[in-house]
Image 1 (cartoon, rainbow, N blue to C red):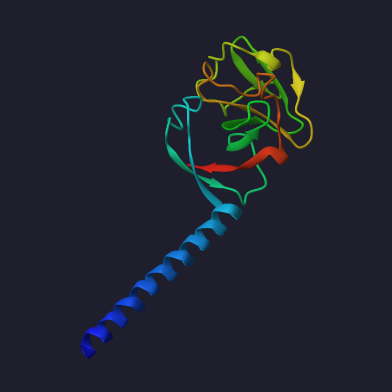
Image 2: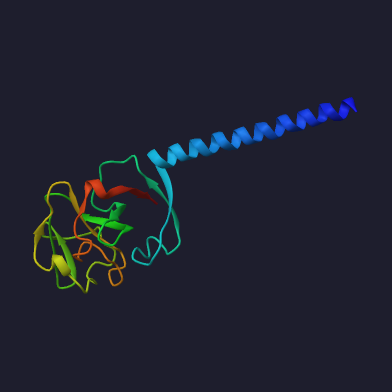
Length: 167
C-alpha cells in the first residue's frame, strides 16, 4: 500500500508538471502572438497565386516600415474585416492605372504580378499622390480584389496596418 501511495504522488506531480508546462507555453505563445508574430488564415482569392484561399501565413507584427512589394494585413473599417494586400505605392508616390496597366511615378510597376491586366482602375483612373503615412494596395488577383481602387478600402494608413505577411 505504501508503494501505491508513492507512485500515486509521483503520478500526481507528473500531471501537475505537465499542466504547468502547458500553461507556461500558452502564456508565452499569447505574448508572442500579441506583440510580435501571429499565425493568420488567408480567406478569399484576392491574393492568388501568391497566397491561396485558406493558406496559413505568419504575420510579422513587429515590423513598422513597409515598402512597395510587401504584402500586409490591415483592418478595413468600412468593410469591418482584415484584408491582405500588396503595397504598390508608398507616401509621395504618384499612382495611376491607364490602359489596364499600373504606373507608379510614371513607370510601369514591377511590384504587381501580371501587370497589364487591371480591368478596373477605380480611384486610380486619374493620377493621385499617396499622402504621408499611407499606402496604395492591390490584390494580386485584380478581378476579384477589393483594394485601394475602391472607395470602401481606399488608401491604407499606418495605424490600420497589423503587420507584414511573411512568405
